[in-house]
Image (cartoon, rainbow, N blue to C red; front, side, top):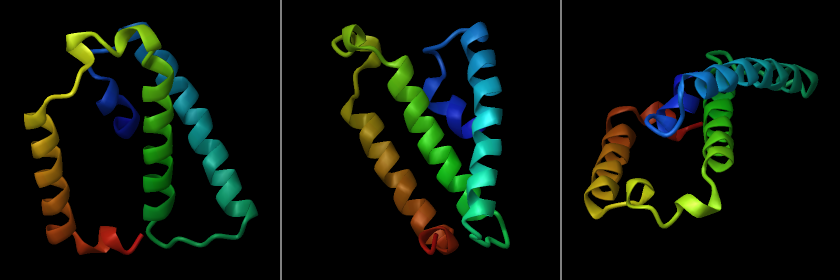
Length: 102
């Protein structure tokens, strides 16, 4: 559930976080069913976890973010945050090369 909650920190309250976690558990169970029905084998479960985390995190961010908050300063993006995100991605690609295989 960490991958779903990190993009939403500071934007949702405790009740919304609880609802997201409950729905996320059902979504992860559905993810497991889909992988087993399609006979996709993943020894370390990395593909399942990263696919679920990325899609669920994007979906939760899309649902929580509304059209009227796009112009608010609190929700805007700044250059320094984008630069740190890029540097973090480069470090992950260099230090954890097995993530590039997925």
